[in-house]
Length: 145
Image (cartoon, rainbow, N blue to C red; front, side, top):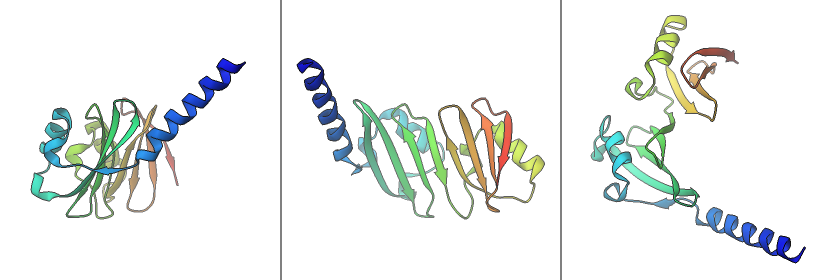
């Protein structure tokens, strides 16, 4: 019983240590190579206003970017896009083609304002507050209002 209590205490302290770290500013040059490479596909370093990193688990980080045009986006430690948003519209080059094709076919005048990748799905928000849910592979699932 004593071992379980000590183990639970250690896990709690470890978790608190990760959460206590919070978001930390990071310079572009200090980003992992893979993340830098993904960002440079669509943006220049001059467009980036601010970058933060946050540890989510040991050796796992999320990198959050704020651009001069108020676009915000996040990459995980493996350079996978997790979220991008801008009320004026987001850069379609960052989104999966299947998702873009479906949105343009069903809502040709809509502007995509947010894209988010979750564990089992992808979510797109449009400028009219409509949300579309897609599978991980880009297959349309449903509309949420």
